[in-house]
Length: 205
Image (tube, rainbow, N blue to C red; front, side, top):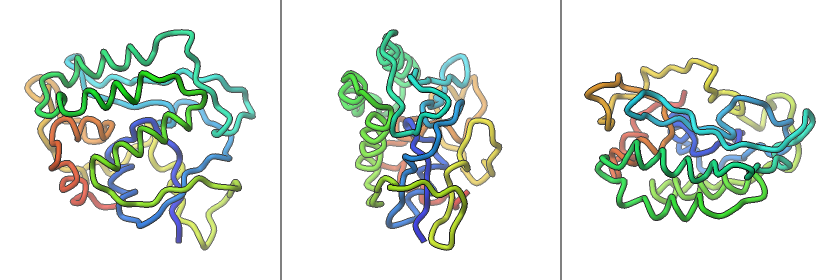
């Protein structure tokens, strides 16, 4: 059975921990794009607490995910880079990944799916995860015998079994409680090469 995932912008820890359990997955591209999800949003930990970083998009009520364009009226990508730097400059591995993040976020992408694909492929490469990823060619409205449906599992509005995610060092742990399901960027910045081992100890959500 091939698992189905939504696209995501630097996906959360639970998303990657689940994805890596499978040799191959599919990313949903044909759905009607929903609002307020990880599809165009990631969460990181700053000195002031959890901060959501959203990619502004151009869409209508019937836009499919593959049709959603990125809005560059504001310099959101520069804001994201500066916020990431402020959050992780003191982390053990930020300097190793800084140039990569600049290379990912500086170009102007036409479509959200392009940006998300580049970001996800980078995360998987850095984590040495070999899962094969392909886009969907048709929309599957319901779960079928041939698929496991994770398209709506990972959501900022849905509580997960976050106790499955063991605590790890976070930059602002001296002033903020542990946040278990931030963007996988947080895990990578703080644990570096050990991030994959941490992910392997997380069960499928």
